[in-house]
Length: 232
Length: 216
Image (cartoon, rainbow over all chains, first blue to last red; front, side):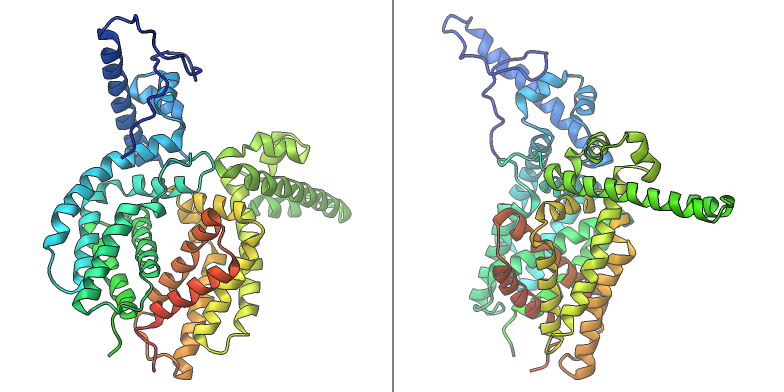
């Protein structure tokens, strides 16, 4: 996860403050630490409020002003920590996904069975983790196409960690002989990611639960697998 | 909107007046749509406001609202108009396919060509398409169904000609082909892929998605 942009060392309550010069050396010892703690607390409150709002109202339906009001902080202090709405969402997702990927890193090496089964399990873990927040996930995807997204923010399609996990899954399959070595893995990864994203849309729009999401994804994985398995 | 049009048509008794009025209304709508198209392309869906669009069209926000219920209505109208033209282009392209697999590729490429010069608008469309509020309506719009039908037609044709074996997952395969087609726009939008590169990628992906039913 990228650290929050801490360059603006101010708790100013007025809207977007210009960067201040570095703190004078003579500042009281306690102040920088205290300020950092306050800043961290503000960040956490903003993240929490934003998660709720994005989850219920989507990306376009949520404004920075609402996030600030919901978090009980000023609009200005939101902007001292985050560059834009897209940046807030990106941080919300990063915080959430850290937990998911730690779990996957722990589980994946122990998975046995065919590549299809390992992929199914891996995506099923995603769905059980995200099922209550499918709208948040859609918001995340929608935001990738928004103009205000800073280049540092990570749109869904560029999620390197998920791409890496799928890639490792396929590599293992190549080694074990159920993934054709000639297949372009990036193309398979992109197809799986497209299928994965589609399932969220289905879930958010049709109120599908985790088992329903998993069932749809399982069928899509099987269909893609027919294209990456060695021809008999 | 259709209701209002009908009511007007009934209540306006002189024969010429409604025509002129309808014409003026049509011109106003066209002006708003032109301005909106430009602003959505320049500033994205979020960035463009009704007020900016009205100003760019040289009219009041009231005049815009007299023709469109809100921003999403305006945007949907632009997208649906484009999609109908897109469907025509795809249908035409598909006739040049030597078989189903090639027909699908021709459909994909016709789409990438269509949006080649208006990628910013496509980008705005994806942003709307994924939103919980406006996404379902856009995805369920009849022109989208037309695009899906074009894909299904190719699959059916492939089964009939014996190129593909009997397919019990034709709906799923259609939807996955469509999503693969859409997902490749990311490469065009964010990484500047050329039509050739998109074509190469699409050819492989279509092959992967048809592998389960391809004979040979």
